[in-house]
Image 1 (cartoon, rainbow, N blue to C red):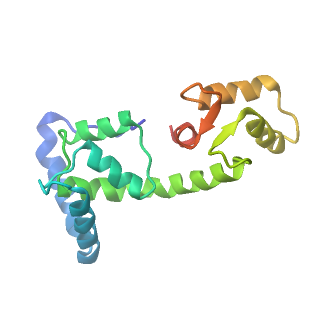
Image 2: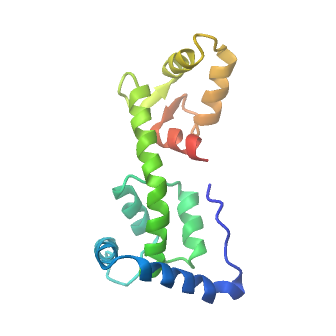
Length: 166
């Protein structure tokens, strides 16, 4: 989950000032690219993104967030994201996306049968490789319980990302 500190109510003006200063240091080219991205996902040209549009934007860059994380982001900015807030989020969150891309790559390597899930036997095989065959069935069960968020007996890519990043 997200653990960023929320600004105090009286500190909104300084918080928004920090965002404005950060946007000022972006190069014109970078700001222009972010503006194009923002406008592409601002489907009704209202000048802000709602949670659905923000989610679509992040997913287009390979960033996957839970509904709870997205809602927390939206709550932090008053329920809608304007361009300045978008610039702040994108520069901050895109750093996290590199990690997500690496996790996705690792997931595809662990998913031996290519069904987009890691099952118990695939997890056991990985753990055996990592421990030179010294993994107990209880340890495999513990990892499955912890990482299999929806309890279907498989670790989906989203389960895997959340397990490694939270």
